Image (tube, rainbow, N blue to C red; front, side):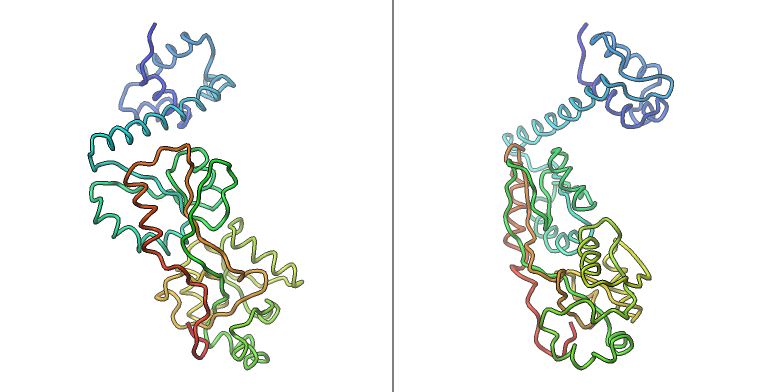
Length: 317
C-alpha cells in the first residue's frame, strides 16, 4: 500500500485539533474520509496513533507528529528554494518578534521591504522572547528579532540597534510621588540611578513572565522593595499612554516611538538600563529565500544604529 503526503497532513491536523469533527471541517473533507486516512497510516506502520475516543496521541502518534512537522518544514523549504530558482517573486517569510519589538521595528522595515517585494506575504509570529526563539529553533520561522542571545550552535546573528530600557513618568507624577528627591533627580537624570528613588510610585509593568518584567522584578528585589503595581500589560502603547496621563511609572525601551511617550521624564535605572543589542537571528541550516535574506539586509540598513543615548534638555523625552 502506498501513502501520499495528504495522509501525513491529515494526521497532523487531527493531532493539532484533537477532534475529528473540527479537523475534518478544517480539511474540507468528511469525517469518514479523515478516519480512513488515519486507519491507512495505522495499518501501514502497524501502530495505534490515537487513544480513542478522546483522540489523544499515543507515543507512536507523538513521534509521527514530530516527523510530520519536519515534513511540513521540508515541503515549505523546497517550495521556497524552487521558487527562487524559477525567479518568481511571490512567496512568504515568517518572522518571530515580541509585540514590543514588532511595534518598534516592523513599521520602519515593512514599507521598504514591501516596496521591493510587493507579492511576498510577511507572517509575524508574535510572542514572548522564549517563545519566538523556540519557534526559530523548531524552524517554524525564518528569523527572529530579539535582544536575548540564541543559544544554538547553528545560529547566526547580526546586530541591529543599541538600546536601553528607561523608567518613564510624567512631570505631574514625578512631582507627586518623588517630591523630596525632585531636584536631585532632574539634575542627575543622565546618571544610572537606584530604583529606590521611585519607591513611592505606583507602577505600570510589563506582563509577568516577559524578559523585561523579570529584570524589573530582580531590580526591585535587589533594592528590597515591594512595588505597588497597579496594572500589568503586554501592550507598550497601554503602558506609555497611562504613564503619560500621570497614573504611575513604567519601563519602556529607548526604541519606543516618541509619539507614545508624550514628553515624559526618563531615567536610567540600575540593573534595568544596561546597554543591550537588538539582533536579528536565523539558523545556518535553515534555507533562507532571497526575500528573507533581503529582509535581514534591510533591517541592518534601515533601523537606527542606536537609540540608547540620553538626550540633552530639561529632562523630557
